[in-house]
Length: 304
Image 1 (cartoon, rainbow, N blue to C red):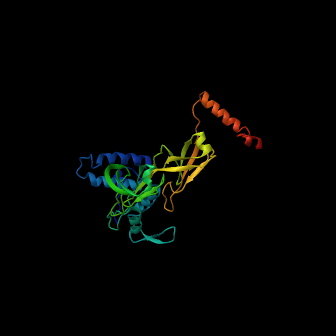
Image 2: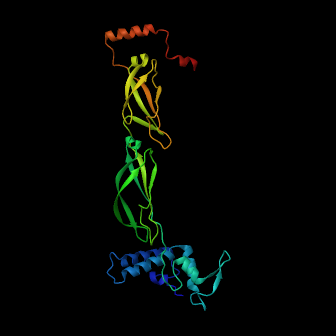
Image 3: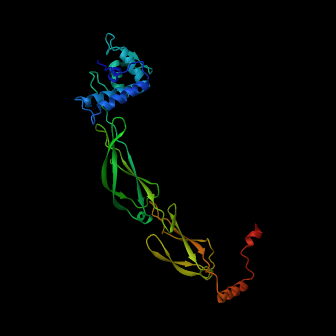
């Protein structure tokens, strides 16, 4: 069985350390890279150099290769066996084929490998999460060389379906739209990572929403009907008499969509005082204060 001399290919000695091997590899890889080399056999040499480096850069594979190299001239090499640590007898040719991807006649074999996944962020408004929709997305697919470096990027555009009810950080898989596989391997997948844009009015709590509803003092005291926004329209909300600042009023089914049920919208009450009163207004506030002389808003302090 023929075994290539990887040390000779890289122009190093078996006693050289990994630093010397890496230096030699880099020098030869630059010289014979098909994109820049003028040598007639540049592509074949480049693959051979890469193959040698893939074996010699790894301590375990290098040790196994050295053992095979030492026994390559033994009588009957290729038929004799050795006892592996597991206790199974292995033919040297089979060992070489399995470890270094070479057949019994020295033919290089390449194995199918799945392509890498690609992940891109998709910005969305809260309003867009209420219904399923399709949108065009443009992204690039990196193409890697045998050293794991990006050689180029291929632009792609897809029409992807975004389901209703997505939440911030959710990952949506688009099968087979990632990096192409190697030698017949499956393509990687595309993952869409949902990024919900902050809303100027609504805070998101799971699938529920909160909106601050400003009220005049008399609206909170006497009760009122006020128009408040939702993600899809405006609705008329009934404010009960005596509503307190900070109180949360639930509007069922006006939150975000989920797979099980739609969340709720909570109106958080904020009492807003008018600006500094004039004399007439001050007199009316004084009358109100006198009518509620027994009311102490700070009784909670005495209880504490």
